[in-house]
Each structure stands twice: as structure tokens, then as C-alpha cells.
Image (tube, rainbow, N blue to C red):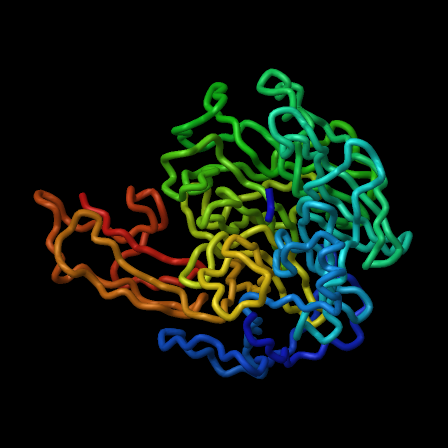
Length: 500
């Protein structure tokens, strides 16, 4: 279900001596703070200057948006490999190993890989890291690879899903979780086995092909124990389901994030599968229209990725539909109190408020499905895909629907993640039934802070008075009073007037 030519800028931090893979259990170290040449951070007059400190401020890195993938292969070699576009790089999994960054992506015929040997200045397409095994019917639709390096046996493990040709009622419903191994990050990875998890037998009564349908596997090693996160069908709680397919008492059917313990990178522990995060709001509807009230068949959270930073565990995910311009990345947290198998995750900022970490803006749509790489210097890099609004000047062959590679640095403040994009984010006010011009729209850098406007000069609907600004038009989102500080997310922000 998953699916850059801009200037290539010089990233000005040197990643010398990096010996560990960028996986969820990578150590963090004090960060170096330099800004790459070529792209300047977006200006923001509303950011409060920091107090004097002996520690220099952390200056986020800004990367090409999107990345352009290069190659040394000829057109004939590319055609023989079956590539329609080098720039199609969906569901990227970013890994660092022995001085090189590797990034793996979804592809119909296998899992493709690119590498950066120049500290993220550029990525070179290296072809397939995993090809379909020689079986009939053939495997295809290789989705969402997740690669970890296991130091215990010095082996790379690739977790992914794929389908088989001719599956009943649509090949995508044949997706099954699998694992492949290799001693070389470029592969070839060899298929090892299906992942047999604690499948929910209730799904047999819904539709039997869904019983073992699962995608978007992400393996975590923590304190010597292994946990697999993945997307699977289940029954979600806590939200009014306007268009459920299957409803049981006080719950509804949805794609959601599950987790299961493993005794090693290959072996699940029976009886340990459970839900981790489920859909709780209308913006998480699997809706290709983006209207949130038509064309809906279920709610959807997918693409999980887990990492830890400064005493907090972050379980990130994508919501809505990968085909929708409103695809987004959100996250939930826990306080690292106890074992990961017992973690209780709380959505940020809460399960009722839609405030994505990254999503649609004026430059790209369909932003989602990501991985995290924590560099030995402590920088948190998020590789994700998106669809550029304009393809002018981008390399060919390409099309408007290509999901391209983006890398965004994240920072953490008081437990809150902030995504730093290389352009300003549009902010506007919606009078939501009021009359008049209202506050002017503007743009600011993601992570910047502005003051919510007052309502002066706006005529209230008859018989009503202004109550607040809200991130949702029905008043169920995040509340801001006039004069209150608002942090700009890395996606388009609209503040709606709420009247009472």
C-alpha cells in the first residue's frame, strides 16, 4: 500500500567514525550544530531568542526536497531491471553502516536500494537488494522494507510484505509478512520465511483473506529483547465511527498498529500479540478524496516506527490513505517505565486532537510512511516519501504520482517532536460562519511560534459569541485562545473560529 531534481546541497556535518547502524536501538551522542550550504533555514521573527548558554544552539539540517536519485546504469540496464522511474522511492528505510547510508524502498518486482557515500549529499540507485524468489506463482508488490543489522550474528534482516499473482479479489489482499537475510547491506537478500504471528481468528468471519494479511513490519531490539510492530486489521476504540464496515459493541473495524514479542530476529513468541495504537479520529479515515466523509471503507493507521530519546519512547505511524494528499505522520509516546512489551502508548497531543508531525503543505502532498535514523552525533533524521506539488525541473522519467524520497530532521523539546522543513508552512484562519475579513494568512517555518490572533473586526453569527480558535471546525481539536502561543507544525495549519 506504499508507494527527488532539486539542487543537491552540501551537508556540513561529518559523520566520521560511525560504526553502528541507524536502527531504533542505536545510541545517541551529543550533536554537532552546523547548517549545510545551499539551503537556508526558513526565517521566523516570532521565535524567542534562547537564553545565553555555553552550549551552542542546535541548528537543524535542511535537505534537498525532494532528493534526486542518481545512477550509473544505462537506459538499457534500467529497462532490463524493470524500472519505470528511479525517483519512485516509497516507504524508505534509512540505515547507516560502516560509513555509508543505505535506503531501501517499495517496488513491484523486489526491494530496491540506494546508497550515500558522501554524508547525505546524494543517493545513488544500486538496483535490487531483494528479488522475487524463483517460485510459482511469483511474489510481487514488495512493500515497506525494514532493515536492521544484528551484531550478534553480523547479519542484516529485512522485514517486508509481498503478495502473489492471481490472489482472490485483489492481489494486495495477498500481502503476507516475510523476512529475508544477507551479510551485505546491498544484498542479495535471500528469502528466509513467512512470519507466523498470533492471527485473529475473528477475521475469518469478516473476510478470510484478511486473516493473515499484514504489512509494514518494523523490528526493534531493546534490552536484548525483540519486538515487531506492524499494521493489521482489528477493532478500534474511542471514536465515533461514522462509516464502519464491521461494528462490534462500542468499537469498529480498522487497520491499526499491533506489536508482538520475538525471542530472536526470526521467532515470534506465541500469545504476545496485542494492539499498540488505533485510529481515534476522523482524519485517520482511509479516504482517497480527502473530504473525510465520502469514499470511505475503513479507518487506517499503518507504517509504524519506534525509537527512544531522552527518557521517552516514540511510536510513529502514518494515517489516512497512502493514495490521499492528506496522508500524514503522527506519533504516540510512553515513559519507558518497564518493558516494551507492557508499554501503553498515548497519542500526541491526545487521541481526540489532530495535530500531525508532518503532512500536506504547499510544496508536497501525501507525506508519510517513514523510518528514523539517529546519527552518532545525535541528529534524528526521518526518511519519508511524498508527492511534490510541482515536478518542474525534476529529473525524468517521472510522473505526478511518484512518491519521492524526503529527509527531514526532527528535534525534541519537552517530549514534543518537531519536523524541520526547508520551506515555510502556510497558516490561516477560518471564520467558520463569522463575517468579515478575519486575520490575514501567513507562512512560517515549522517549529516556529506565533501568537493566536484576536477576533477584532469579525462579525459573529447571529446570537453567538466567539469562544476560541480550534484546529478542527467542529471544536473537537486543539484549543487556542487569542494571545496564546501556537507552534507551527510541519503541515498546513488552519485555525477555525468556534462560536457559542
